[in-house]
Image 1 (spheres, rainbow, N blue to C red):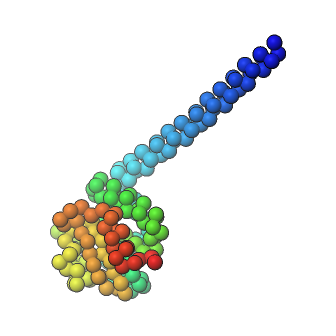
Image 2: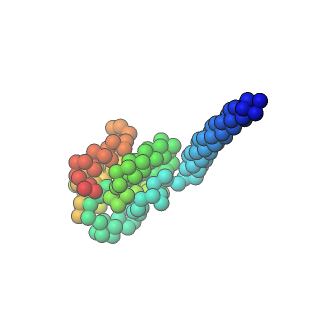
Image 3: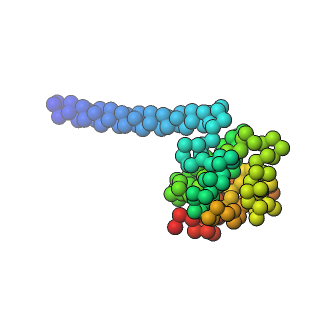
Length: 175
């Protein structure tokens, strides 16, 4: 009789541990999912780019100074007024972190200079050799020794993180 009681006790104990582990895993997954939703809501609600705080930011007014101090890299020119841009920026941030490019990719927020494409005029004046390739944001600008070498913008199609990786591979950035 005692053996029968132990068998039932062990079955119940194993069943309780299994329920406990499944509950723990489900709680963890639900917590991570809710955290993701809250983070996305924060970026959508507030005009904050996912790139801010993760990579160095360059202001348009200080572009000359910043580029004189940097050897080579990529500037991401974007604005935070579009949900589509925020999705793109989250994807770009993933690629930057996966490829260890935090020291080679810079963020230039042009949200304050969107009127009459003021930011385009500023960038074209600073980089006359990419004049034809820079018409709208978001865009990537590859620079070396303070000179813009190549630009990819969203004029014909929306840029993606693949465009960033294309520039990284083409110019062997971070290698």
